[in-house]
Length: 476
Image (cartoon, rainbow, N blue to C red; front, side, top):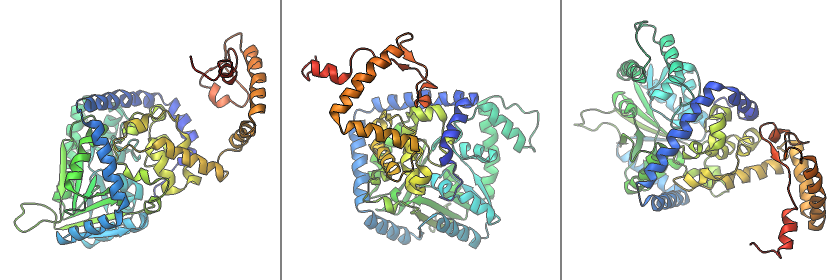
């Protein structure tokens, strides 16, 4: 990726996030709103689990035949009067988009929400070419004003409160009445709507992402709750869709099935407010629409994931359910990950894009509780793939030396069961004696990272293996 990453500094970022009182208060909204709403929405749909299986199978089938579906999609887009551009990496993708904008003499680009555009650093490329990129999704607009990256893939400004947003609006919207009342969220929304409406009308180019690309028809589909995507793609003279390769699926019927689990998993809605389908540029007789229609398909490392241990990650439909349910994300928020993609899905995808040498901290940012996999609408085995990354990090000696030596010592004993039983039988009574006063340890050698934030109970009784043997290897 070309965007600035602080992923290698995850531990430092996490410590700062834990000390940020405002952030901790804001993260409470993730724990309450997203989790409860998803559970309610899923419970209302008896076939929800069957739809998850279907969505998984559709994505697996597509990935197994991705080359064929990409060819079919390109053919249909061309037949509809559009253009498809394949980009190997971020630099190629940005160059294609900037060239299209320049060819139209564009000065202003209105952008719908797109995580891939964040990944490739599109805004910076547009600005460097002398044009202006305007984020039109409310959350994206707010963080653009602040010069920040998204902290969440569907709620970019979830880390902020309304007082902070008010301060930013007063700082930037200096042409408006300084005595206006912005205390209510509705007033902030109304002001953003009025400001952005002018930007929509003046934009020369519209850029959107895509939730799905339909091989059957050459259609791109976006789902939004604000309608900004519709305005971005219909008011400009050209509409540019930027999407990663794995967004293609076979048919509109397949899209309809996946849409039934997408919104429920993301925001707890039965469906998003807007589900918009676009196929090619304006046709003769159409009342509106762009004169040109371009699709930029970005690889940026995806093709190297096909057929490997991380192919399942390409099933991801960007619902954010994994991070909404992740205790680590709840504790530190999205910016701590230092990557465009936070949470469990980012812990798998980011090392695939930038390498485990730079992104190896993220797979370690997990309790392996399994909540991410249990709520994923396409059943991605996220904990298993995080373990794969940890294994690769260990094999390449990228993990901390103390961790490697500690595992080496444990491995020495684990390969020698008799010695292991003897050592644990000796250690248990010693630890039980040392911790008998309080019944727990507030500090332990080599375990400061654990005991700094939680107590470790002192052992009681005999080891598990000793008790198991005494019972003849049977449970009660």
